[in-house]
Amino acid sequence: MTDEDSKLLSQIAAGSEAAMSKFYDKFHSVVYSFALKRMREPSDAAEVLNVVMMEVWKTAGRFQGRSKVRTWLLGITNFKIIDSIRKIGRHEGDELSDEMADHDSESAIDAIILSENAEFVKLCVGKLSDNHKQVVHLAFFEDCSYSEISQVIDCPEGTIKTRMFHAKSALKKCLKKLLSE
Amino acid sequence: MNNDKQHPEELLPWYINGSLSAAEQQSVDSHVQSCEHCQSEIAFLKVIREQVQSTEALAGPGDLTKLRFMNDIKKAKKDKKRTVAANWWQMGLSVAAVLVISVQAIMILKVGPDQSSTTPTTAKIDPASKMQLAGYGKDNQLKLRFQPQASITEINTVLNAVNASITEGPDADNFYIISIKINNKKSSEKIVSGIISQLEQKTKLIEYVDKP
Ligand SMILES: [Zn+2]
Image (cartoon, rainbow over all chains, first blue to last red; front, side, top):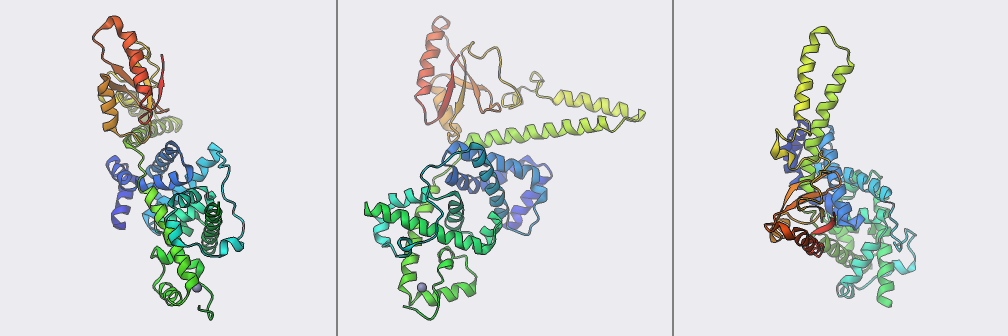
């Protein structure tokens, strides 16, 4: 599996368009959904997808084999998304703050009530800050381990755990507010 | 309640996605069994995970995005060839090398994007062509941009319905030129403007129609 992926990369490094096409088919959704999660506009996400794939085309020879191909690819994607968000300069207006946990975010929310209010969950996940979206997507969509996420985002493992904890607090706060309205 | 240990809250997200090490997994397991607080945290995280997975699984970038990319790497290959040739010139030429290089230069000119007459098939989707042809706006041609998520099948269906086909594109801004086949030359202007408004209603597939 991973061997097959690194083989594809060495073929790409040698200039094989067929290998690039295969790689694109296999990994486009990994890149695209990570970008879409954070950029909202499908056209922006598609743009990032092609920028990332172009980077793969140019730098496939630099893949070291120390990490999984997917981890390496998500790292490139993360970098390009940040770059693109900065260029677009889009402000998300009412995004949830990164502030520390307080009493409101400590106590539990009934999961059954939540499942009945899926729209609220969606709304609050969408309002997370970009830092929080990164970890939530990687942990819950890609099912990455925290050490994998720390490689993708290039942060210490402790930071990843803390970020996830804060993301959870922010979600709870947002959901409680919506549920009490 | 389990009071002798701290809640392993920071590990719970990775407990539910199954990526903890065996030792971590085991220690969380034994804590969680007797801890109501962590159980409700897990239930909460599971709802979030379900939501994240359900909405995003639907995402797809559409066929055109890949088509554009494959064109881009073809172009990148050509550019690379040109750079290599330019470097050769700068290296200073020995008499013996002159002949080789001039042959190479001719070859590069031949594969350049302007030689559309010799390579009709690739010229069709060559992003290097600027698409500012005289035909634009005349000869029943229109310039338009598709939505990135549109599939080729969907695009063909729409174009077939108005008797049109893609003749060029995409360019750097992702525009295509389409030609519309019209038999009744007298009323072609009227027909084209009718088709424009028809295409403009297909907002799910067509992002923008450039009007003549
Ligand atoms: Zn506990």
